[in-house]
Length: 86
Image (cartoon, rainbow, N blue to C red; front, side, top):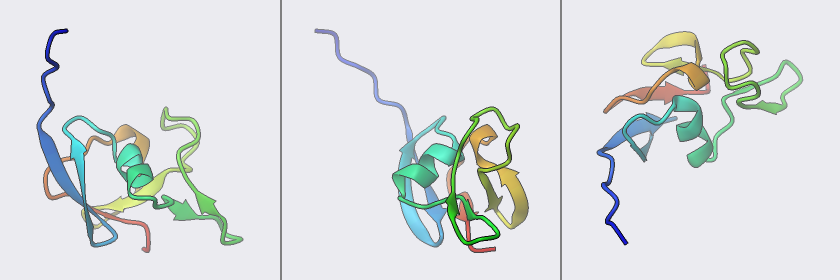
């Protein structure tokens, strides 16, 4: 069986907690791996990726201080800060 090459890893901060993911992972996947909802609805329900195409806006998070970013359309970078509490 041929050996599989491992992708380089990056560390992102999800609500100030480090999460290690393979390079090329979307922020939405990092949020799921961290066990975090992307945002909460106006009624307080946790929300996460729905369409995966950037159309529904259910996966919005704050990325490096920028509000309302679509996590399903953004790739993780080393040291990226993801915040669902803003």
